[in-house]
Image (cartoon, rainbow, N blue to C red):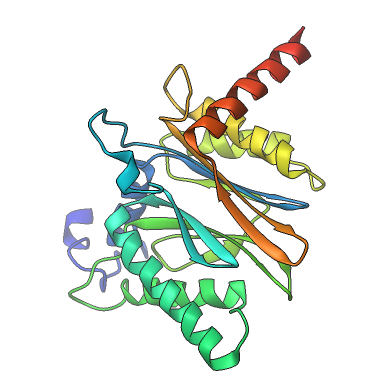
Length: 250
């Protein structure tokens, strides 16, 4: 039955479904898992790397899954990276236009809403296909402080305290987050929780910096700070967390 209604995004099936949007979400599930956790003093973004080829020159790319939109907003992606690049460039341009016009940073929710309006437009007009990518947006503004948003190919978005996108084991990730998240979680505890979630969802042993990306978003004084872990920092963090876990178990 789906074959009659999945040729265009402008056609609903009798069940009220838009199959092209559902196919885009399926493409995202084939990507590596990405986790976002809102802490009391910042936000953690963590992701599983899918590209781990030995001959890949890592120095030509700072990050596979993490991108900086503006000084106060960053994002992590799951899905087709080339689709994500188009939307990230649009988001950067929108943020700079807002700053040029109003001389203040663009509110995070307004920026996310603007990007999602564009994504929704690609589900409504013939000759277009939905963007095959989901985003986790981490940001800070003077209106609502730290904020974490998730958006999908349909153009829907929502604020979250902790969530995950992508990965074949997304239900496992959500279950671990529900069981372990607490409202007063610190940035360090959020980093440890993100590592625990990815360890549960990845079908790989010997977790290390070649297979993961970690970053955090926090505020130091009046300055917003965004930091992506280097390979050495991430390996040291993984080793430290494993030692703490062994101590607790004993």
